[in-house]
Length: 224
Image (cartoon, rainbow, N blue to C red; front, side, top):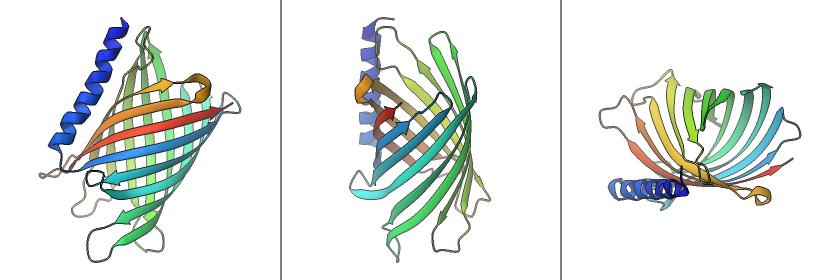
């Protein structure tokens, strides 16, 4: 395919985000900085910080630090575990302020190629709890499937993924979630990688579904 197709893809990505911005009452953003250490082909260590905004980018939603370790077992097969310390901004209701949360997750993932397509699948168990509060932890089982299309002569290859969140022991008013993400990234070689995405997320069971539009930007630097 010619590079002009890649340019059309970038236009589509930003046009989709712009239209969604105009339609939604609550646009959110996720900005990330990621440092990755790969001492061998089998081990990955990642430290990430992320900052999130909500209410049309007018309020802080949360910010957190996450550490993850991944181990490649076979070609395309990887296991991982991560921990996250979160400062979450509760600015609604009678009691407001920042809450401290702790989250851990365990991953099993697989990827493979088919011509110019790369397919990725991930199964994740997630457990999140507010520190100092004797509330039941929020537990999810998540399944993500995605694909990346390699465009010859073009460095901004498109990526598309879908992820389903299944809440374990749902309470009244809670439901499962679905997340669709369209994105790309640019590898600057020794200077790192910049990634951008547009994401839609909604409840799959509620009649008055809460739909979120999220734009994201991430910088990643890898040490060998």
